[in-house]
Image (cartoon, rainbow, N blue to C red):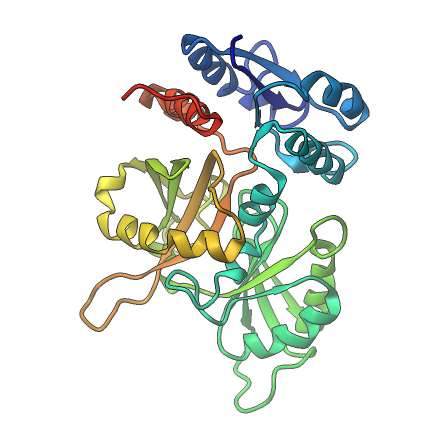
Amino acid sequence: MKLKVVILEVRTGDEKLRDAEGYRKDTMPIINSLKERNVDASVVFYSNEKAEELFSALKDVNAIIGRVNPGNIPGGEGNYFAFLQRLVDAGVKVFAEPKVMLSFGAKDAVSKLAGTAIVPANTYAYYNLDELKAKFPMSLATGPRVLKQNRGSQGSGIWYVEVGAPHGSAPIDFNTPVNCTEMSDNHVEHHKLGDFLDKCNEYLVGENGQLVDMPFMPRIGEGEIRIYLVGEKPVFILHKKPADGEKSATLQSGAKYTPQTPAEWPDLMKAFYAVLPVVKEKLGVSVTPLIWTADFILGPQTTDGKDTYVLGEFNCSCVGFTTELERGIQDMVADEVLARVGVPVAA
């Protein structure tokens, strides 16, 4: 019997990323690559309303590849994760399993790595407003901070926060003025700290609500370095350099994106692979996601002038790679799926 692999999609999201048939533009290349390897490959659209029907239809396939941004699922992501877990429990290989997606995909993955070689020790996660109000004023007293929500993309809900005026020896409290820059478009808002933290409560409510609090990395002006990976194999690097004088590395804020190769960042790749076993241990998983990214910012240089690298976040729920199809990334994905299912892949 042929191996059966199904890609899951949803019928919502950015339509610019979809082809004429309504699929993600990077879906059919994976399907075709799997078919070239004699795999019975197809696409199924998920919805919470059809979860039971889909489970019955998919519980006997060999593997599921999720190409779903959980945030795009009407009705919430909880049912989707429960659906995937039922498939895992039925013996289906799911890429990525809910525990892997939640471990690598949630922003608090960074806080769980605090104190490792790639994350500053003074990195924290908050899960409710009381925690945020109790601890953030103390972290802000050490210098400018970056607060990141768990949801959103392209800098939405990621805030650079600094004290708005010299305060001398006065303690930072809820009446302290703060300047808050949202990374989506670099617009600045001026608040009292208490009012801003109340505003941030919107990021703490609902499924998997959380905020990560990190020290600001001044070298962001030199760019953010995103590693694209299939399994543990690097595919390419995207160097995202903010516009002059800006802190945000998003296209909307005018950043310049330059595709590069892992070979152009040898020290980063060495540091990344040195810490990867620790990452998996700290996040409680034995395998990496199938398709994922790791974002880094240049940290302080060492005493001998070498660069250090600070992890900004991982992404794995639905990483797009349409512009990289010409590099054959779809074949790497197909080969990795076969390897994980246990089918030997020719060298």
